[in-house]
Image (cartoon, rainbow, N blue to C red; front, side):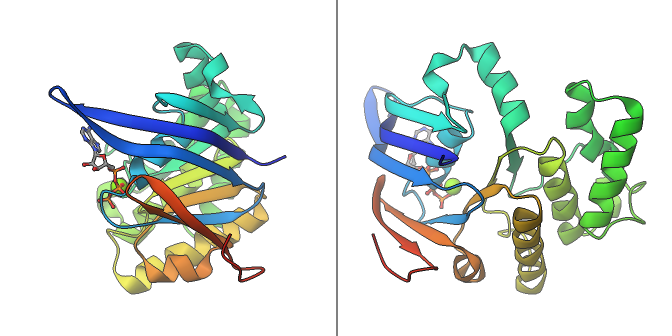
Length: 233
Ligand SMILES: Nc1ncnc2c1ncn2[C@@H]1O[C@H](COP(=O)(O)OP(=O)(O)OP(=O)(O)O)[C@@H](O)[C@H]1O
Ligand SMILES: [Mg+2]
């Protein structure tokens, strides 16, 4: 079963009384356990598309199905609950809570989900080690480098073992060497945790690392390139 299925999805924004089409008739299927990048020029609709897949927004037309669940069938409350349990999100600007330590940031979604204190401690220890920050759990975000902050954000996104992790330009605020290390870590986490990762990026390093790249222009999908078969669909 694919992790993400979009069928004929459209979304527009309103600028005063003028409708601005952001996505038009987008159909897309993303396989389980796949490393997929959404690429396209600025304003092409990548963030709009990620927000729909993240269940942060609803389409005007068409359907979005994540891990077999059609999102249109869920109330707003049920949608928030579904998002918390099934989707991890990594932001361009890391979005860590500044007053919480690295460990507490990773623990936060576990706390909200009602995971017991011993299980939370064990999971945080495991994730801090997995992202190479075993000795930095007590540091506040302000005491970490950009790359280290993004490692914390990756660990937080994986905390509840979601089947899907999304990231909007996760390397845009990092230098190229740190960005390359973050890409390698995300790839490693995607394989070890058997999740689907979907990113938007302008970063050529990220495009090269992907199993699949989806090109978007003017709110429409122009093509999909799969690394395994090298063919454009
Ligand atoms: N809140 C909004 N109100 C009005 N128009 C919007 C809004 N958000 C996005 N748009 C418009 O929708 C289109 C798609 O925007 P989107 O942010 O999805 O593009 P993007 O591909 O993520 O761009 P970038 O690479 O610059 O992040 C653009 O034309 C943009 O101007
Ligand atoms: Mg964007």
